[in-house]
Image (cartoon, rainbow, N blue to C red):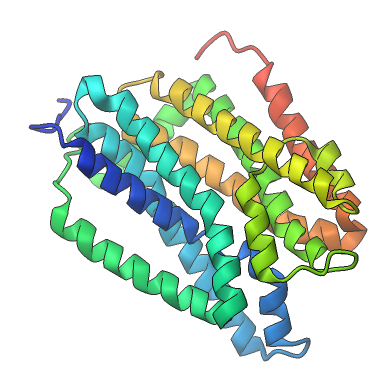
Length: 314
């Protein structure tokens, strides 16, 4: 099998455009988090099943399509960049993604406060459509890492995951850390709308500017004191995103098949975030803020154990 390389590297301007696309696309996964209470209130306690079902179906579609895009863009940018610019390109892409994550909740909260949560999603749809048009017109084609049919690519991806223990371990570390992130952000909107805080969507969104992930002791205390909550936010985002950057750098060094490596890692990583986002409100409903904090801490503890578990065969 012959490895295929792009005929020429693209400019840094193109990489920055891809990074912006990455940030705007990944933001679609996080817009809903500060709006959970507002959405629930607008539907009411006796919302029609058809309305709730449509909302869940649309959310699932957004999650699947946005995750597919973000899982593709980083290896695409890495394939287009010159070898000596590849590290810079990946860093630029991850910066764009982090910016999208951090600002998505703020933008969502502010727009929802002024025009309602439906207007936020309508605006996001327009932005996404315009982004698709722009990328279709300006993005150069990138050949695959290997000249293989689609089904063979899928089989090769599965074999890659089965062969490399280090890839599996780093993927699960990322999944557990992202699950903790999902637990926090899916539960914090519920907590902050209750006494003594009683925040609106704009205030919850602005809180996201401070940051987020891993000091659940401080976050736990934030159930009563916002200052502790802010400390936990800052520690959390710093730790989760630092872990993600480290994992990506390790994973890309395992093999030359970067697209397939990213596919394995980002699929497991995204599933971890989805699991945490689904489990957070359930934990909060059962045991309140303490239960959500303990669940997030358990995910992080699992990631910590995996990090310090040695593996002899990569």
